[in-house]
Image (cartoon, rainbow over all chains, first blue to last red):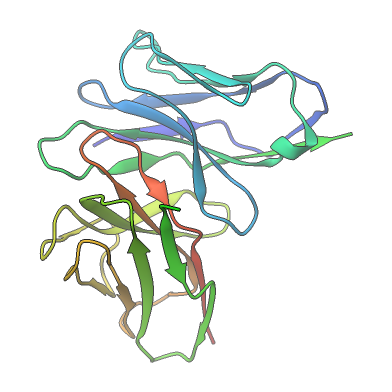
Length: 115
Length: 112
């Protein structure tokens, strides 16, 4: 089956620092890839996505590129803010023949940004 | 506004009681899902449904049951057979295969 591995946290950065959260996947075929963000006590919000190799997803200053050769989808941001403090989840889903897609999640990486 | 609602946000039950968590969506999505999240862990799939009157077990279905009588609604029942029910439960929906899933705000269930 599919699996997603992401770097363990917590990651603690100062405001305006560069962020990288690593994510690699194992799948047969070419999954769609996602980054979700979860703020305390809330559900998950889609941050960005990529559906095929070399696609770059971007949103709110965050970026991630679908790298087929390294089976990776690392999340980056050039300058983090305190408001970016949250838990970030990498996820993958296969394009099945049915109408539902089972998402496989990484364990999440907690980011804490300090002043 | 379109979205997914879950109620209640916090739920307390005594051990041995069944409890039903509500999930409603007005996004006109065909597929709906239930996940369980434990502290410091990722999400695990409990059940999912592709269409009305159809649902499949996920990775941790034991001790849970669902129904899908309407497209908009996908309630989850946590039965007394679930050995460790205290967790954060998330409902999601999607348009179809390969598409992103949209999540509700979650219900935190505590069994006393």
